[in-house]
Image 1 (cartoon, rainbow, N blue to C red):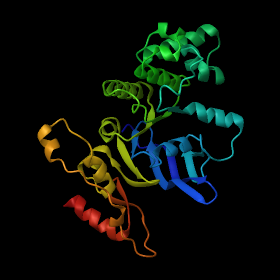
Image 2 (cartoon, one colour; image 1 turned 120 degrees about the vertical axis):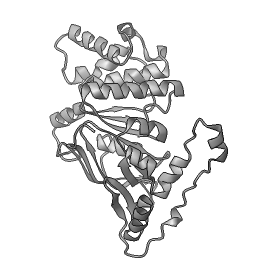
Image 3 (cartoon, helix red, strand yellow; image 1 turned 90 degrees about the horizontal axis):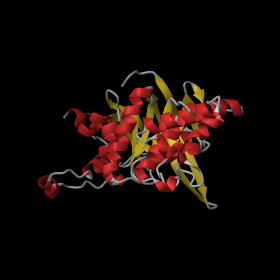
Image 4 (cartoon, rainbow, N blue to C red; image 1 turned 90 degrees about the vertical axis):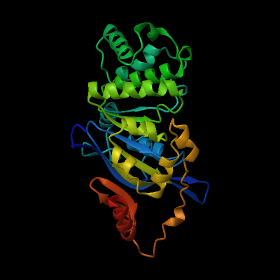
Length: 313
């Protein structure tokens, strides 16, 4: 990690949706974490756990039900003028999951990438605008001849590179990558992740990398947070989480990762998470607690002692 300076502070964030008259979906249910400048925080969990909703709420695509998101100390969900919101959007960008749906099929690649440049007035002339587009295409491993083509002329991996170029066009500081490789072939996934790592070093970027593939998340992330049904249940340095998974749900996710070893796969036992293992008493406070340095688990005081023994044992 380059520095311990906080870029994003998420405090007691809640994002609830009303479904019908009586049903309330708690997509994000009172989660708290920080993202430090220059790091990649991985956010993992199965489909529907609230990780994509967390990303979209941080960037204010959704208005938070409750809680705060502070970007360099400024509340993202506070009152802002149009100009302040525009400046914030320039600093925070998003790479979307589906490279097929996230690009306008009617626009040429040059106009897709330059959209942010135009909105924020970052080019003084048409020539400067096109030169910036060419530069961005080359940055993501494409070439300037691609600028005059339409999205349907590209493969999924190439389209995701175009999406990355579009995010970079406004010189952001923070990028939320929302499952950016899940729609891609396995052979292309590593290329895109390596590109993101390379761009992070070159542009001093900070990432929130959202995914359900724990093996790929470990490769790119400095720290990893695990979500389950709207709750953050474990947060630790990437290696520490893999070597000492404490929450039963984290253990379940890790047990599902296949390895290229036939002998291991024949004997691999999948752990199934059963939420009923947590028997809480009335009035017992359940929250994120520090089990070891920088290793937090969502638990009660009683469970904390058990997790400490497991970690040190």
